[in-house]
Image (cartoon, rainbow, N blue to C red):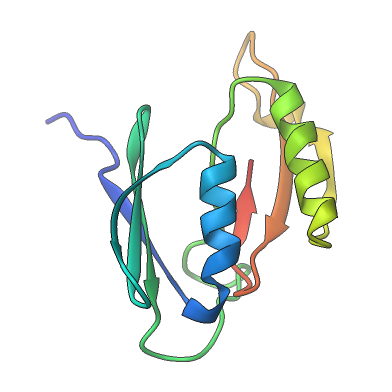
Length: 128
């Protein structure tokens, strides 16, 4: 069997949708569906889709507990990480875990692993 990631759905307080729209636009993802006030879907030419939906229940994720820890997006150049950091700074969104920084322990042979980690207004952790 061969498979690939088809999509991921992130449930949010839809009052925070501006953050996610801005992030996905910044990352170059294309809107493929939108139902105002309920759900928006994005597609990348390189991978599956990301769907952002209005949560039916209140509460936030504890990324140290069982469950999804973070959502990571891969970019092509280290400059993209620096640009992400500048964009987050303008929005007063702090980078977490002393990022941006190199993480050679995560790099595959011949690769550079350089990351920035931050969380959304809904306490969902993202890595670029």
